[in-house]
Image (cartoon, rainbow, N blue to C red):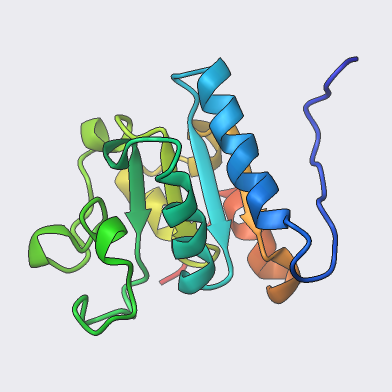
Length: 159
């Protein structure tokens, strides 16, 4: 069987295991290719946190970077995952603490909302899609079509 480098679409009604399949796929990718870099994105912070929390069953938290939307001004208000917050831009009680490039490339998995992923371009001015081997978009049907293109295109910076 030949696996091609093209987009794959997982489609199904709620509760059919689409997110579970994404998590398992990422776990298998990292098992086969421990240095692979994966971006996981979704339309909402809650969907991103769900994937992140499930991934913690398979990979270490220090290999995951959760980039939260700057709109989450208070990291203690319960809108963020306490476990993922420790490896995020809200770590150490600071807001929007960008990782250094060295730190950023230490992570195998970066989890970010569709619109906030464009802010990662600020790290190096290069399209972030060039720095990932795989991009997963969960809950894509909840997003507007232009939002779904942001992680794929990578070159756009939205302020």
